Length: 190
Ligand SMILES: [Zn+2]
Image (cartoon, rainbow, N blue to C red; front, side, top):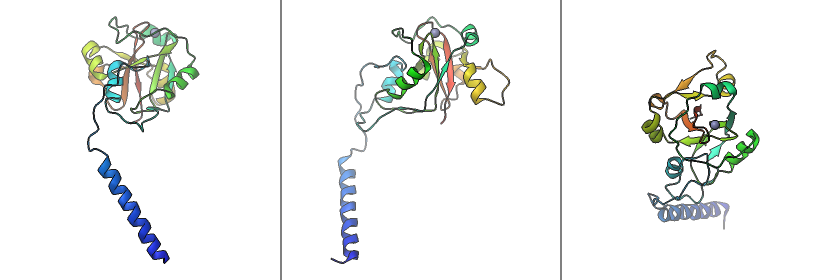
């Protein structure tokens, strides 16, 4: 067989394989019941929305998280919301342990370079915008000092906050410390 014939055969086999793959994959994945959130840092709403379709190839939904520990000033100024998104078992993680925990989050989804607050020794629980709007649409959620100092070098304002009603949905996520009820917001990369 000549080299040209070999290349032709290879192309033919490749095309056939590709066509077979297309034929075998359904156009719309089937919705599945993902069960309850297995981790305290994803609310049930977030877990469900990220995992409502089966994706056996999906791994590592949280990429390059940036854990930010609440300072005393953050805790003093953060709003406390009595309504809790859920309760989580108390833990005392270090920031490094929290980062490792985020990186090992099961399931699928997408979170890239998310500033993730830590308060009371554990990770804040990420809220769905729906829950935040229903429970605290006009309530200020605090950006953590650590994020503002590092990521907003041109800003002199350290008391920034955001209400869910004014959310930049693709760029910010809202959190609650489920131990103390404090509310935080963190920016992320699109
Ligand atoms: Zn707390």
